[in-house]
View 1 (cartoon, rainbow, N blue to C red):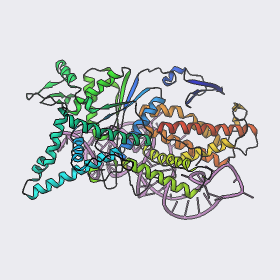
View 2 (cartoon, rainbow, N blue to C red):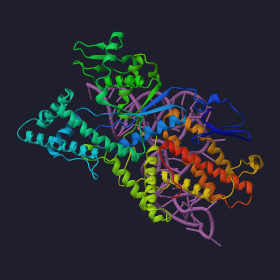
View 3 (cartoon, protein in one colour):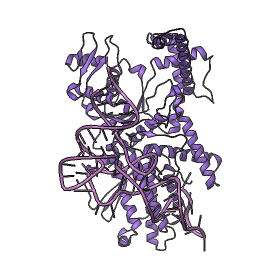
View 4 (cartoon, rainbow, N blue to C red):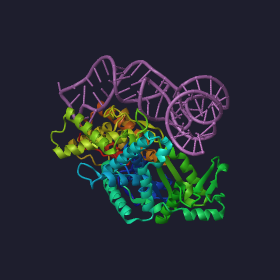
Length: 526
RNA sequence: GGCCUCAUAGUUCAAGGGAUAGAAUAGAAGUUUCCUAAACUUUAGAUCCAGGUUCGAGUCCUGGUGAGGCCA
């Protein structure tokens, strides 16, 4: 019970208040607290949540935003449900894609460096686009001279040069490695800014350049155990036809690793790094459903105990009305730009309403950001993760109705009440003296508040921030109706007034806790 | 071709096999001498099609149709 800061018993409710605002209340009878593992930490195993996992050749976009928000939120929810959580990502920092950016930078860069107006990830992304442009021009030129399209695509000089660069990188060529380090460092600086603005963070970074050779030993080992088998050409496979899947390659004939080999190795590496891990959550788009099905099955067959607790947090793509986002075609919604847009929209709406006279300019800017990001985050998180999201850039994200700002607004109103309640409303009041005559709205609010702890558990079990978002919306809707129908500070009955203030305060606390799980901040005024 | 996911008001989303399928938004109509109207109240509007399981199906099963994805 170390985490319980205080408790009280009110008419058959045992209320446990846990440090950061969570509380449990047990209805009617005092239950054995061990039923609630999260209250006393029955399950000591940790869980590692992976999300973001970008490539280092281009900036983060709307798809990454969904990935990050989901992964971060699920990690927070698991924490709230009592798990120890490690947040991580694996950065795809090697391969032909980054060589393409590097090559284009060498050719066209003229020593350009990131600046105030151009973040490092944007700069590198620009050269990736520049590569693609040059590549296409070369192909067109070759085709015009009579080469076949497919042949030209394979033998364009700039592509061959990029491949040569990759070989040099793998061989440890000093110059290539130095350039690679320089450009990746720019990208990480850029990413850091985006993550900070988005409000997500990580406990541990894994880099593919460190992990791409992992997994080979495990495959060799599994080969001995008979989990895998070797084909005549020397490639190693696993037969999953008994499980309703097909055969899958785990090591190429030339002995090089495929993605599966790496992922096997990385999973094992993580458990080596953090021996208390009892499971992992991978936040990866649903296009990789099959990959993870196979990965988890392989790890089970290899006999790892933690393989039973692997979960692919599979989410739908974020599509535009025009279809899929493609960075090479310039049809991506950039993460930084979108966050700026949202902030601007919040500013515009806020100015029209004009309620912030007493705020300084920097306080205002901070608030616009909070509201704009609240709108964006809520918009994305309220949707069931597995459903795909259609994002129309021309139709801006709502600020009214079932939205983040709606809930933030309610929170701000509650804070306003608490500021004005200049009497002592801290002491416990005996519900029994008035509970027979509770207003229907008060009863509904009590019911709704009480659902919070189990909603957190449910959201953790289902890896679904959407459940938290929907719960919070219901609560807020209920509160607004209450707020409209009854007078809180104007109530003449002293005890009843205190009850209403306490109810309001509690609703505010639940909103703040719930939104914290979604990574959304709440304002004192708006 | 094989496999996976999704399909609910005009639109965007809800709904643990359980009562009359909830919201929001857009539409129509109202509420501000009173705690913040980014709010509240009223109104109209939906389960892709055909079978099946069940006392009971938006939810489970089979077959279609449509959208997206993975593999070859």
